[in-house]
Length: 299
Image (tube, rainbow, N blue to C red; front, side):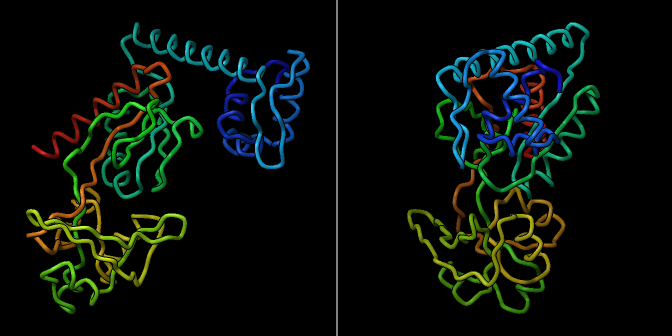
């Protein structure tokens, strides 16, 4: 690193809350980032972080420097986008996050199509079923289930009417029979999604004014929704999935939905971006492209 490098490394330390986390993201050694930070603090004549064993916290002076460098970085990105726009093209990095199932089935293809239209875009796709921190993970856009409560996030409805659906393979239904009521799930092999090793076991259904919640006892559970779908396709049991996650499997007959007279719980999907940062043209363009592709699926 040079004596006064670009500010990506400093911003990443702030957003990760640790030198080691920033080093992993940037493919640097923690020692190299620590040295760069010491040089920077020496040149500025202030301490930028309060150091503890668990996390780095910005000092008052560090907050001032962070706001300045963040604004400078955003202004630079905006300038590069405007230059690209003047040349009639979109260019630069585009970091997207999506749930694993939905990302593999839809976002991967959408990103390919968008990059064919704009070959100067450099995409980065994060597939994970956790709730991403757009700032800490330096994300431009994320697909999320539900409206985010954070007032700094801007959400655009992608699939507001999406719901969960009960699915299993044809072979599983042939062997065990389809339930006629949600209460019959107690007799079935249930496959659940988990967060922090805690499976989602409250499966909610509605029929007219009647709502029922079934507490299932999963035979298998995983923190990756794509694995749960794969288990269902292999005939290991019944999964309660977002309909969009299994749309291709349902269309191909690899999975079959049960309880057609019951509605699964709502799982609306939104495209979310950080509202506290300047909206880059390439981010807005990809958002609009996703909306167009989703509309085409529903037509």
